Image: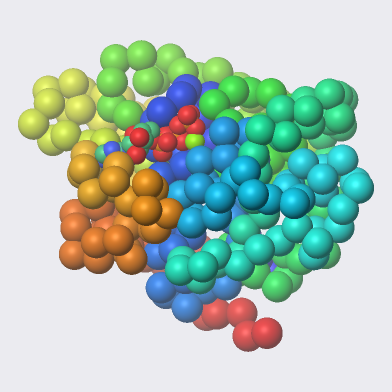
Length: 258
Ligand code: ATP
Ligand code: MG
């Protein structure tokens, strides 16, 4: 059965999309079958996967609104080797569509979970109904964060939301891991925040850190994951290491054979 991971942090620009796209591609490199769900109306994961968001006939919005089936909307990324449920600005309307509906995405993904090893959901930068649907559908939450002063404060709001959801609609939900992104070891604050993270979250903090690397910022404009754009870059090596750490942690070294 595939593992569903929501990549979430209500803070903007912390590396959610970069992590979703590049972790998906790195897991494919390790022979895993992966689906990416773009759950952000910005459509950044869609564009970063090489799909023009404004040329789409159907998007994840149509699936959430129940006017299209998953199979009508799902696409194969041209270069990265994973399947994607793409998004664009149409998804803003889902906020109304999903008013008080928490389980829609979970129901949509249930029939295809067995076809994938991993389903990664790129969440928008807010704790809205889209994010709630992602957390309701997920087995685990991967939280990318930058090691800066207010980062921990932001994490407490997210932790509370995760807790509330695990107390109500999704009792199995866990924090899968906390990923330090745009990491700069020379910055003194990085050390302090890392120490606090280890104190609060202990072994939930990934050993792998993602360095600040300009190649990671360039890759999306070519619609490519970093391992295709520049396989030897520090960013590529970091995301490959993260995929390895996640696979080791889950003890899941086998692939799904379909
Ligand atoms: P949003 O909240 O808007 O969805 P996000 O959390 O998805 O943002 P990203 O879009 O992944 O964040 O990253 C924000 C910006 O930082 C992007 O321009 C991205 O290319 C860049 N970026 C992300 N990670 C790195 C990194 N490790 N090194 C350098 N640049 C990075
Ligand atoms: Mg994003």
